[in-house]
Structure formats: structure tokens, C-alpha cells
Image (cartoon, rainbow, N blue to C red; front, top):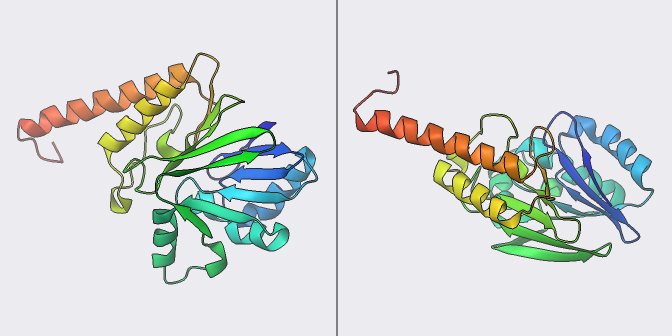
Length: 218
């Protein structure tokens, strides 16, 4: 009942069933028609709920589109709405209509969907989405699988927070867990651990050089 759509932007998570469709993220606006067509290949149902894992445009660009065509309700951490609203050119229709501080839980299509805020990771508004029965986690941009991470410091992201969030996901996983990365291929517990180890090693290496008084250029 869970699918991943890959395109130009963050990977989309899709939960389908008799209750309708729940989306995790929705990429850029120019892809709206293609995303809608891909969803129709999976299910004729409407998109009832959308979860934004954070505020970047390649994850929230079609909030307004799905609100208009399907009447979708958009959920996100309150910092996602706040950061989107700070943009003077923002479209009010693109803003999440339901926000939370720590998380929220959906009971939908026979699945229990846990949305959990991960503080100060990729941004200050990140959430992961855990599909409990299916044993699937959508990590948002906390995970760039087989890629170097992007920590948006201007939006409250921190390396320490990202490491803590990845460790939390590792602890949630067993050997069968599938992890949808924000970018890159489908991952699992081993790839989460490899990503954690890479970030930690890099962080420690740079910290050691800084403690020696090295400049940024050095």
C-alpha cells in the first residue's frame, strides 16, 4: 500500500487504500500534472492528506495544487508554515492548514502513520513519517542516501541535530525496515548507519582541524 514517486525534487511517499491517498511531500509545481497522472496509475482516489517533511520548495511546491483539485488538507510542523509565510511572494493556498509542535498520528487505510518532529536537523521544521504496520520510514531530507548531506543552517539546521535524528531512525529500524530518503535510492538500516558514520567522521575531522587553528580555506 506504500509507493515512492521519484522525479525532479524530493522523493514522494504515497499511502493508498480505500480511505484515499496520503502524500508525504509533493515536489515542484511544474511537475503537478505528471505527479497527478502517476497517482492515477496507482489509485483513482483523491489525495486526502499531505504531510510536508520541511519547507523547501522541492517538497511543498504542489500544496496549493492538491488543495485545489482534491481539497487536500496539508499538515506540517509549525516552523514549516512560519518559514513559508516569511516569503513575501508566498501563495496563501500553499501554506499548511494544520500544524503541530512535536508530532501527530494518522489512522488511515488500516495503517498507523506517526509524524515525528526532529529538531534542528536538516532545518528546524523537519519531520519523519513512520508507517508502523508497513515498517517504512520516510526520512525527508534528513537522509540524502549515498550523498553528502545538506544542512540548512540559515533555516535552523545543525549537524549535531541531523546526527541525533539519524540515530533515532536507526534505533527505530529492524533488518526489514525500508527507508525512503529525501533524495537518492531506497535505503535500509545499514545505509542509515553508513550515512551516520560518514557525517560523524567528517564532523570530527573538521572539528579537529578547527581546534588546531586552521582557517576555513586551510
